[in-house]
Amino acid sequence: MFSYKQLQDFCISVFQEMGCPIEEAEMAAKVLISADLRGVDSHGVARLIGYVRLWKNGRINPTPNIKIVHETPSTAVVDGDAGLGLVVAPKTMEIVMDKADNVGTGWASVKNSNHYGIAGHHAMMALERDMIGMSMTNASPLVAPTFAKERMLGTNPIAVAIPANEQPPFVADFATTTAANGKLEILQRKQEEAPTGWVQDADGNQSVDASALKGGGALLPLGSDRVRSSHKGYCLGSIVDIFSAVFSGANFGPWAPPFVSFLPLHPNPVGEGLGHFFGAMRVDAFRPADEFKADMDTWISRFREAEPVSPDQKVLIPGDPEREFEKIRKLEGIPLLDPVIKDLEEVAAEFGMKFPL
Image (tube, rainbow, N blue to C red; front, top):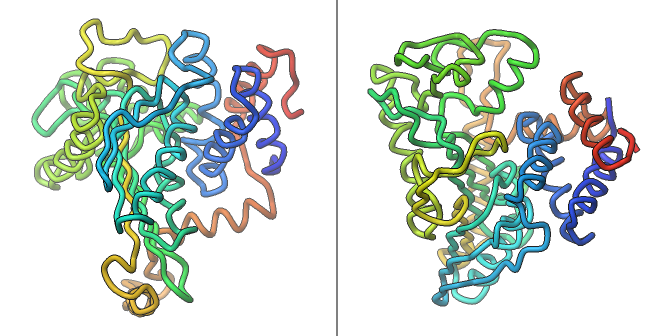
């Protein structure tokens, strides 16, 4: 087990070694470790070595000039200047919240960015300002559309955070695939098979090989196959891709840059970097906030009271499992797989440090 502070201090030091200013190094570390705290281990410190490798390949700018390149009172297009998505995303979320403060809602599409961590962190920033937050991003093309062999879309997550009053907030954060690629990476580290419906092989047949992508296979859209409505997951992933990249001028579909540094960028890009999309809505732009949050309490309470299918189960609200992880891990520490520890030790050696510090 490792404490939050141990991982935070280490990540801050690594991002500073990459050339990030202290404020942005702290921001990036906060986003990254929020994933581990919330039980989303696939997007936490396990990803740190990936960011270091991208930086070494010249694909991450540690001191970006993040700027608005087009805007209206409620919208913006932001150029991330090839910065860490872990920094570009929260800074853009501040932009949309400021717009929401002024005109009720704010929206921004981002180009020229990189992997931004867990979508939920950015959406949840709006809760601190009594707003509804939205966050989505396109990603490396690893997903085959329904009926296709070819990898055309990313896992393309969607996150929505909605405040309540006495109840905890509603926080939905999910990939538009049956499973996120990071979960496959964890299975590979554990040398375990993938559940049926997660991946297909190079010929388009369903597979349980957690390494299927390395052999030319693909992740499957949410739903896994046509009979189980994979076309709906395909549609959701497509919407994220269009909002994040076609809106902003980032690379979309199969042109999206890969997260892994050993794969080359597409030789004929259609845009700049990776794309994100963010939204913030001031609750009182629709109705009095106290009334809305009281009704959210009622909504959440009633769903919690839904009769479960068996006595040993209970109906959860989106965000419940992550809140429980966060509560436990803040007290007991964050567990890391041996391969992840090995990666972090490799990162430490790269910069003449030790892990943990």
